[in-house]
Amino acid sequence: MNFTITPAAEKFIRLMIRADGDASSGFRLAVSPGGCSGLAADISIKREPAAGEAVVEQNGIKLFLPAESRILLAGVTIDFAETASQTGLVFHDPKQASCSSHAH
Image (cartoon, rainbow, N blue to C red; front, top):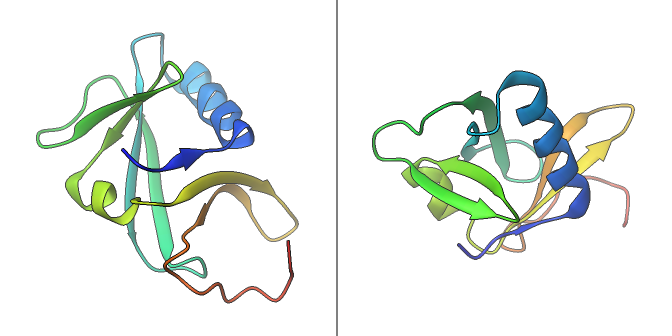
């Protein structure tokens, strides 16, 4: 898979798995078009991938990705943000223009 997970996002995903699963659990990341960054995510901790989901391991984290997610995440950087307006995963997609007003 050609997407990137930042250390902050990786830490968040590990915490989620530890809180809601066990060592064999995976992080299901169902991404759909929408939201300011162009992507909206539905995340959950699952013991097994659903039918048709790919299991992608990055740095020892198991990600369960539905087909649409695999397409939408191409080239995307998955980051974690903790701001007044949102806490959670943020998707930086170079293919999408962001509608946020603040610069990085």
